[in-house]
Length: 153
Image (tube, rainbow, N blue to C red):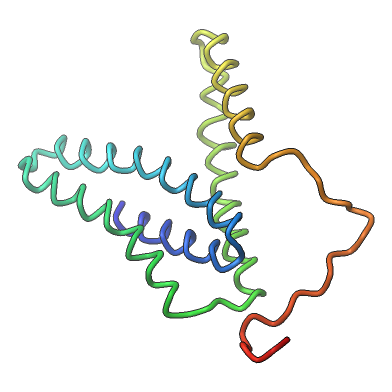
């Protein structure tokens, strides 16, 4: 779990390399996700018979890992070609988890109303974070300056 949280932090730092809006969106997702990671880390460590002290140490390591991962991206800049692939990989991994783990859970025999309400709330939350589409898809994006050369106008 600590390695997973470290990679969450690297994804967060990489997203801020794209821009503030992308970074803020990924930060919200990582912070929300890491609450569940911390709960799982503590619970799993405790269930395997480890002392409370060790479970808390693992919880602290899991909480510090994303910060270290994000800070590590201050030491390097990913080229745009790799950055898109890196963020796409993480996005694809999340879509896989949603399709393979979460979606089948929605089809189990339990109250369908709560599943529907949670799904609608999740879609609404995503819409609030991302906002309505505003891009003019008929016009190509203007060329972006090369971020690797500070002297480039």
